Length: 336
Image (cartoon, rainbow, N blue to C red):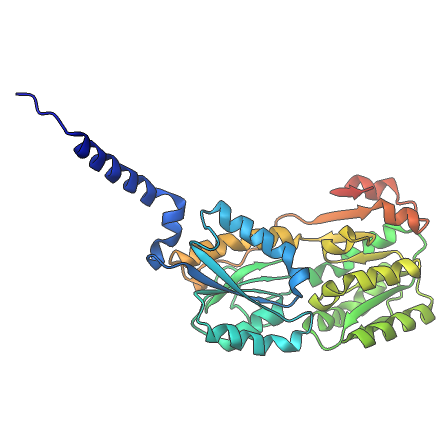
């Protein structure tokens, strides 16, 4: 006897197969830990919405590559400090009240604000500071607590940035250092400034600012000091106001080195360090693991394996500078 399946039976089998395939896709896996509802990610940014756009585009790209679909499997609720780090604690408290499944934060102060606001919600940080020395994590390999993420240890690169600036602009002897008053980043540089100055044979007068008005006063003081170059200490406040700083350097014909790539892409002379865009893309992998059940305490904090040197030759030409071939050959990117 031959048993024949009806078209309806075949359709039912096909439907079961289709459902099984869908359950095996990354999209279904991404949402498996939370049933049918989208997960909620709280974004605590030290920057303005405009300045944060590039970083979050990278994070969203990373999430998409891992099978997450914004609006369907996850959503983002953002709070922006606009470069004013003293606003971070209140913004962190606002996010915690929303009970997100995870908080994504930038900068050491941002991570610290999030940590003080919650000990239960997982936190993924992207920072250029040292999370161990500031008590954010117990160690890089074993973070402990509810925080993990990516750090570039950016302030440790200040000496290298100044060394590259000196090589790129021979004859530089007095480099004005722009720092933000009362921040961990400023404290780090202040601690190392004497040793860096002696090691490189450079005068490094320090100019601090904590507001837009103070930034203008710092500019005036730098001009009066007759500095021959400029270094901007890594800080979210300066990244937010980077176009104002770049314009000052151009007007004063000051070759400048920065710790964030966005400065050079907007017209600054040199950048050396890790790419925040790459770090935010990497942060998506941390979010993915945690949202699928991994514990932050057990996920090692990672450091970027690659540091970039970017030189803007258009800016060099405007400043009347010829960048030595030895520097250009080492550059990962030369903008013309």
